[in-house]
Image 1 (cartoon, rainbow, N blue to C red):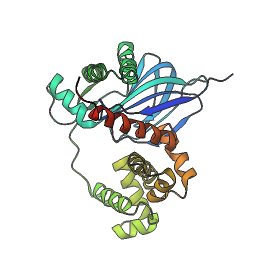
Image 2: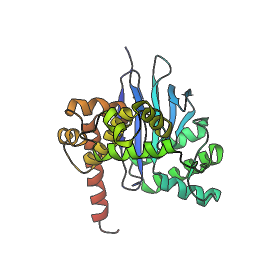
Image 3: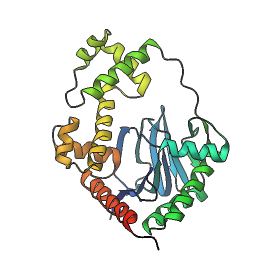
Length: 287
C-alpha cells in the first residue's frame, strides 16, 4: 500500500513572521512558483527533487532545501516512496535581523546554496515544529533563531546587489504593474506588449529574464499569493477565487494546492485557529 500523503500548514502566535509546514508527499508535484518568504525545508525521509535556477537539485534525508524569497522553483518526489519533511518559512526581515545580529551582515541576507546536508539542522527544524505544536513559545522562537543562524553561517551571506536595470527589465516591471492592477481581468499578451511599445516575444523574453517566469505563470503565482491574503482575512475560498481572477473555486483549489501544498479550506481553517490562539494569548491575564 502506498504511503498516505498528509500536510499541515500553520502559524503559531509566538512566531508571527514564520509559516510552518509538516508534510509527507508521494505523488504531489509543485508547479513552478515563488514564496515571499524564505524556505527552509528539512528532509527526514525520502528525497525531494526541485528545479532551481536552471538545474535540478536533490535533497535527501538529513538534507535541507534552502530557497530565497521570490525565487522560482518546483518540488516533487525524487524517489518512488516520496519525501517527508518539515519546513519553516521565515519573513525576509526576520532573517536579515538574525544575520545582522549573528554575522554582522547589513542589508539583505540569503542562501548561496539551495541544498545543504546537515542532519543536526534538520533535527532543529523538527524541534521548532514540535515546540510550536506543544505551545512552547520560548523554545519555538529560540530554536528558530538557532537554526537560521546555523544555516546562514554554513550556506549564507549578503545577497549581491541587484544589477542596474536594463531597458528590458523596465519593460518587465511595467508589465508586472499592469498585471497586478488587472489581476482579475488581465490583457492578452499582444495587448499588454502593444501598450508597452514592444513585441510579444520581446516582452516574453524580458519578463522571463527579470522574474524567472513567463507572464501567465507569474500571474497564476501572484493570484495564489493574493488569495492567501484574502483567506487570511477570512474571505471564503469561492469569493477569493473570483476576486483574484480564477474562474471558480476548483480552479483556485488546483493551483493553490500545487503551490502551497494544502487546500484553500485547510489553509484557512489553520489560519482561523491561529487567530483564535493569538486572541486568547493576548487576552489571558498574567500569571
